[in-house]
Image (tube, rainbow, N blue to C red; front, top):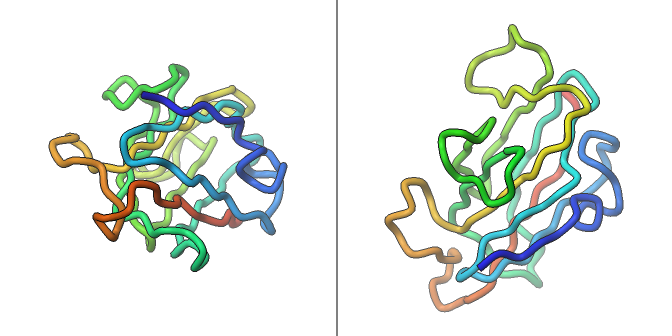
Length: 145
C-alpha cells in the first residue's frame, strides 16, 4: 500500500535542489512504500546526505529509492534505483558526462521519488533498525556539489 506526499511538504517546504539548509523527513510505516511527487532538479548537481534521524524518530535500516516518471516504480525502467542507509550519499546530476553511478535526470523534468524500507531485490521484509518498530524515519539533508 502506498503513502502519497509532495516533496516540499517533507523538505521544510522547499523543492529539491533549492536550499542547502533543509532537512527531509519521511516517517514511513514498514508495511507501506512512499510515492513523493514534485521531484525535479533545476541545478547541475545535488547530493542527498543521509543521517541518523533525530532521537524522537525510529531509525531506518535500509531503503530502496527510485526516481521515475511513474509512481511506485522500483523496476529497471526507473531513471535511478539506489540502496541507502543512514550514512549514504546519493548524487544527482543533469550533466550527461558525469559518472554512471550518479542519478542522471533531465533538468526541470518532473519525477516521482519512491521509497521502500527493504533492499532490492525485495526478498527481505521491510524493517526499521529496531525490528520491533513499525514506523521509521528516512532523514537526509541536501548539499551542493
